[in-house]
Length: 156
Image 1 (cartoon, rainbow, N blue to C red):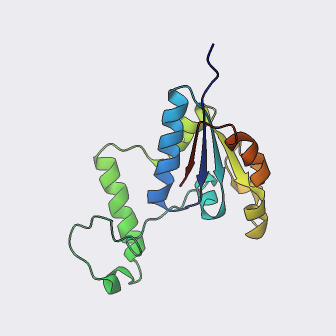
Image 2 (spheres, helix red, strand yellow):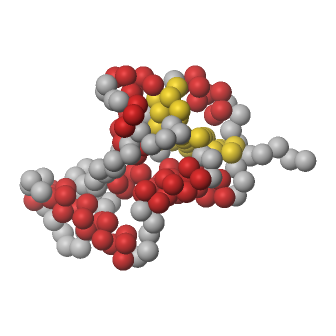
Image 3 (cartoon, rainbow, N blue to C red):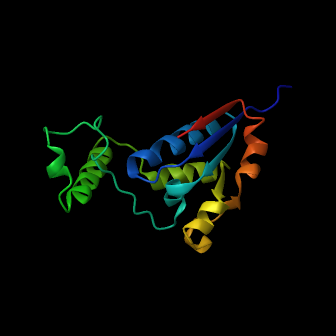
């Protein structure tokens, strides 16, 4: 009998657009029978909070398709980030794309192990009670144990 394949993901981003890749890849791998673990560090920890307030910005993201050309100066105006986030969420809903909350729940139901970087939690003085249930806290060594045996390791 073949040994179960493993996938390890390091997730470092905490914006709406960057929350999708780790959850989509992890839930897909879990559905395909992989044992999956995501190590959430730095800003990626925002994706594990009970109360998600993820936003998207076009600043620093020249590849983001815009409905019309928009100079960087206008993108930096107050309220633009909120507007961009609303537009992105509306487009995703219209196209039937699952929300980050739904994808995260799929991962939880599929037993994807979520490890929050303890050093980052301490660094930013985060309260562990702000995170969803089931999150484990550990350091890089905890993750390396799993990642060292993984068939696929991704940095997102």
